[in-house]
Image (cartoon, rainbow, N blue to C red; front, side, top):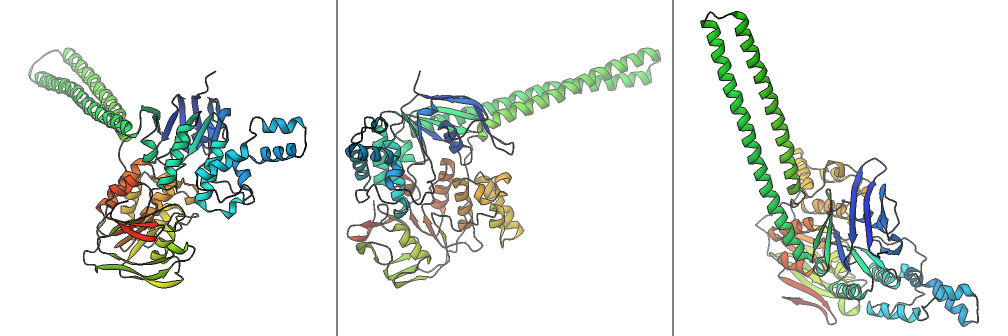
Amino acid sequence: MSKFLQLNQLSYGLPNGNTVFSNLTYTFSQPITALIGRNGVGKSLLAQIMAGRLLPTEGSCINRDLVYYLSQKAHENSAETVAEALGIQSILDALQRIENGSVDPDDFETVGSRWCIQDEALNLLADLSLSHVSLATAMQQLSGGEQMRIRIAAAFLSQAQILILDEPSNHLDYHYKQVLWSMIQSWQGQVIIITHDRYLLNQVNAIVELSAKGLTAYSGAYQDYIEQRDAELASAIQQLNAVKQTEKKRLAVVQQQLERQAKRSSQANKQRGEQNQAKILLDRQKNRSELSSGKAKQQRDQIAEQGKLAIQSAKNRIDQQESVVLHGYDVDAFVPKILAELNQLILPYLAEHLCEFHGQIEKGDRIAIVGKNGSGKSVLLKALAGKISPSQGEVIHHVSFAYLDQQLSSLDLSKSILEQVSDGQTKEKITDLRMQLAQLGLDNTVINQPMKALSGGEQLKAALILALYQKKPAQLLLLDEPNNHLDLPSLQALEQLLQSYRGALVIVAHDQEFLENIGITKYLVATENGWQWQENF
């Protein structure tokens, strides 16, 4: 039997009766495949079905018992140790019992061939810069980034034949993305990555896109996918124009028939009034004319309806590929040269060589704060946003600003998107915001749900709307990894918005392509010698 993961007419519906996807049939035959799709389309639900964590409504998934699934969300087990999170505690316990003299067959069966599992785990942790972490360390003592790396290590220690990794590069800096890719490349089994990270997408063997029309496979990596999608879009537009022309001609033919029939009928009525023909003959001609005219009208209506369906079908191919839009907004051109000052700051929580900072944000600045995970990028941005107080020094703002953090703390999870964006806005502004939400792929069914029911990407879009379109336009944007969780169309929309934004910008992000696309002009880099300004990174 093939060891590839196979989907056979797979469907999944929610308890409320809504269908998430239906009749998915596909074989994942490439060594490394990326699964992509817009936020909320059901990628994580499909992954859970493929991993055996959810049952499909209909259909089947072959070889899902061979899968290890790395979820996008961490398990909430505060008492768990690193060894338990890695899934090797039972093997370590069996090894310890054997070392103490146990001859129990169950212990030997538990160990199997993994006599060096402890060294294997420690070496893998070292590759992920976690040498300081012992296997007995409680997971709750580690940072979010460290916990993510532990969970990645668990996947590669699993010995599963198929790995499904759901957004594994979220919150990883460029160095750890390289390490992750090296691990994926050296994996002996099959890897399916759910990701919108272009660093990973640029290196996979194939891309499979989940959309409302099902699964569509594209050979090659991201650039190949873009070229194939562009060709599909051009073909779809050409087909739509051809269908419109065809239906226009068909309707014109029937309309001409109706006009000729009406003309003949008018002439017959005139003759009936002028000539002394037998009434029964004239009535018969009139009935035949009306019958013929009625059939022509019926044919016209049928052709019109068929045309609508054909045009809608052709439009659907284009609608699947329409880009997401985020409109820019005007900011006050008359702003001071210095927008914010960070005077002689001593920052809490940071290493000694990074806790001191002094600088200012000027008009037109487009700054990226970069550095390794845990270096203090978010702490510095929080201090600039006034969300944490420095141990010493002060932060002074001279203009209005908007701040978006990684935790999306601006959101009230009990309220809907519409409730939150409408707060304090005029009717005209609310109408505009609804349009912005729709163009981000958030329709009426989504914007009226409680925030906690939405996907991570949908929540991020809502937080972006709240930050970017507040009542008083911000002269300074402070964004902490705003590209995490965004699908590709939304990421491109965000890039276009930030590119056209006329105010100043300070952003934390690990995606180099994203930073280049939004026109970053300065890099504030966390180095071994403290914070340093650089023109390139």
